[in-house]
Image 1: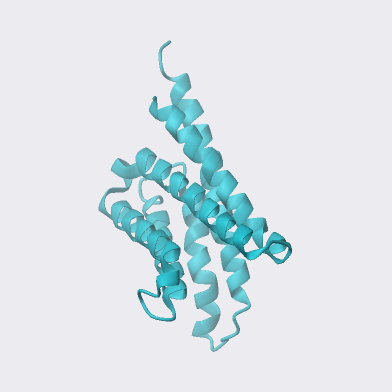
Image 2: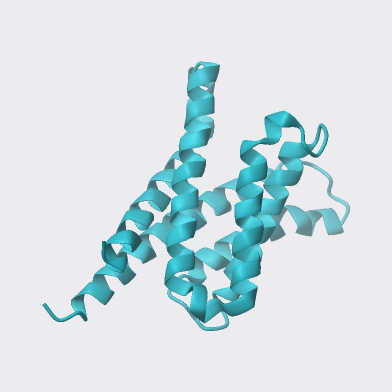
Length: 177
């Protein structure tokens, strides 16, 4: 399979995962628990496929910083999916989500240095971490900013997916037939 095809599939997966993650809070109250759990697994699988596509497309350009962000983010995904085991205690899910978000923020910042086509997604992931932290620095402890952060995180994956498809098409056009 050509890398352009892999990038397209990863892009479609990232858009699908990001979109369902974005609208999920509107759907979850109307779903039975088992359906919710399967939706969470599906979202994370699609987002992980998008992450693999991004690493494939930019791994060399983003260097060590990109690799550290990627590995941290993948570790966060794995911790999120195993959070029911409480491997880090009762706050496992919260810690795992933070690890995932911080990994994406590091990886997102790594997209800026070589100016990859994915820098907009990277900026969204960075702001997804910054949005809830900034008010806390000024004494605002309300959890209301987590929804905005979640939306930025999901939008980052949608933007990533669109860009992966664009890059794969542009790369495929440069290829001799």
